[in-house]
Image 1 (cartoon, one colour):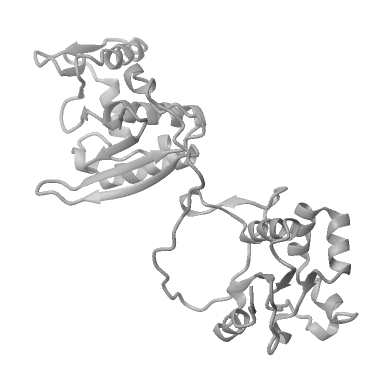
Image 2 (cartoon, helix red, strand yellow):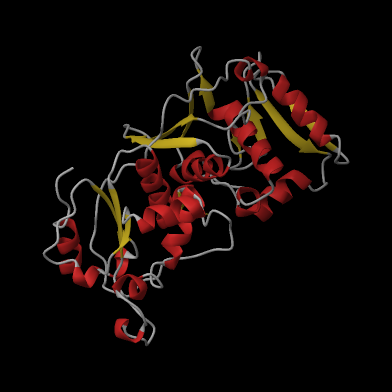
Length: 328
């Protein structure tokens, strides 16, 4: 109904005569309701969902309760009850929408289009929750704007019920996929804190299902560079923002004073390098923990550098860190 369904007055949907699977599937579902019928209109492309005269239509009542009844095509959306449902139900939802408003060409290129910006955004969110890579484009027209999604890498999730479309779906994954920085805007200055969650890899999902924690990712990349000999040294630092105790209150030499602040990053490096390898590299001074406050005047050549908790840096500290980077 969210795809090729009519919701403004009566409850009906349209489909091509060759796609008889759709009305057959709808009829199977309607068999669970008493006195609800699927009626083929004189127009060969249209089917109505009706009840006996004088009786309530439970399908219409359900659509009313979800807030979608009466919506024109440009105002359709996915109700939260369906958008944030089980994996099985989200897959069924997407298949229904892709059978009607989705396309797939002979090369397996998959797209979804809608005149509703909100529906396109909702479909994008559900697809991303299934592991798909989705890009969004809007085309202005003389009538209604045309919102199109480009979809790939769906982790073996079949996106179609219709056999003619399902048989064309292939794995389009080629190389790595990237999210690009399009713009940077200045926000109000407030103290921030990195989030740590109860997970072996410390990862969690942010907006658009982008995985982070950044500290874990940067530690993984740095470890690869060390193990493959792509860098001679790893420098790890962070602003020493404390909760009451100053740097001088911590016993030991400068390395011992700094390491408690960088304990989360040390644990990440140990995860990738192993304890024995990490301790050996630390003893050889290949891995160095440096206080950001004491890096002024230094240059680090052929080094991989990590600035952890950078959100707590001042602008001057960030500029100072960047200018410490020497020859590569």
